[in-house]
Image 1 (cartoon, rainbow, N blue to C red):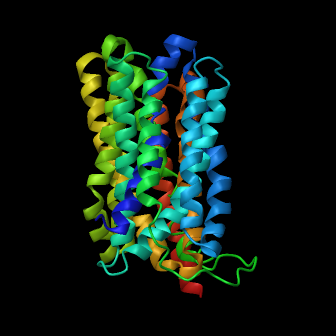
Image 2 (cartoon, rainbow, N blue to C red):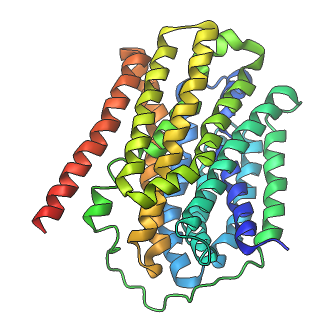
Length: 390
């Protein structure tokens, strides 16, 4: 008999698989539908349109009516998103709708699921809930990209089979998670007052300024870098895109034990390590912009490892910090706000696609590294000043 938290982990894995299965499909849709880089990154980022409202609304619903009331209906929404993406091969505009629905499913799952995971891990060591949620989500993100890329590269019907795999996975997850119990009493009085944890200087200045870089570094790794070497890879370019996404995100999952250890010692320790690795990752990305052939491919692999480590450490450290800050009856809503902030980073590849033709990719990567450093330095300085005066 699987533990309740393992069954929940299966549902989080499945929905995050669906969130990222689209990532390696850029070259498929470029060949079959004529989608350019700007169009693809816009479709990729449209996921956020469904995600952010769902996070904010269903986090509150979860705190009031229970986690299961949100997670159960999330799975049919995820299945419909893949069905719409299948239809997008015939009607390209439906790709936007499919991605919005994938964001809706993710928004329903992430806040409620992360809070539920903490509650199901109450007998485990401190931080286990955040770590289990981060590992489940990161593994799903990575495996979705990897298997979608492999399927699309070497099996027939690349616009169909990757999504059928996700539908099968979601049906299995539905069976596993259906009977997982709610273990926390539902809130009876949820007024419209601001969330107390979000209002603290620790959240506003110690977490919020750098949070968008969690997915900013990850999505840049697999959405921006692989197309830069697609000409040299030719017949394996789709699989390579999936491999880069998987390396980025599975690295983020594998590094979670270290992220948890650092965040338990000092909230700022994990953030410093994560940002340092991110800057190094942007440095490797700059090498990609100045090279070609085997050297640029190798530089992408190095960048994916570094940026994936940055993503994983920042995600784990941020979730652990939110768990410590938020009271039980605000946990899902506070986690939802954190996810809203980190998903702002999904727009980074789109912004780079707009700027790069004018200033070059190298300048974009250097500028991103400087902005990431600035977000931590300014946020920490303001937070420290605020705490000193209070």
